[in-house]
Image: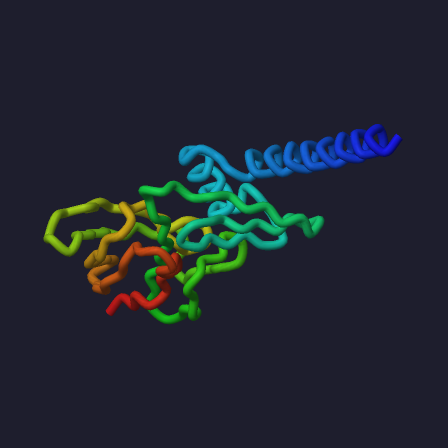
Length: 178
């Protein structure tokens, strides 16, 4: 009888662990997307196609709190770093971790000449880019680098340095065009 009871208890414990593990795996796989999916997700929050109570992006994850309070975490690509830059003339806000749902830059839908070099002087980006409806320019850059950036707009210019190491900020709101 004891062996039968022990077998039933053991079976029940294994079943519960397996079920919980299966749900955890389902939840984890739902939270992790391919880099293209993640980029599309970020883009959709940035241009306000998707809504949530909050969505912020750290150096390693997107943390979304849905309107119903459910929190979903998505892992970012291991080789690319997301940074969002809001060049400004008159108004800015302090920011380190970019909020995809609430950060708002001053210069919306404006064209900027953006030039980025890595610390070895290699040109990483030299393009005319447009800020989105949130006033930010979103960039995906190689991780673990230090960059020099120059942004020009209507005869005004801002220069700065930033890096893409673990725990670096994903929101740059300090580039005042003068």
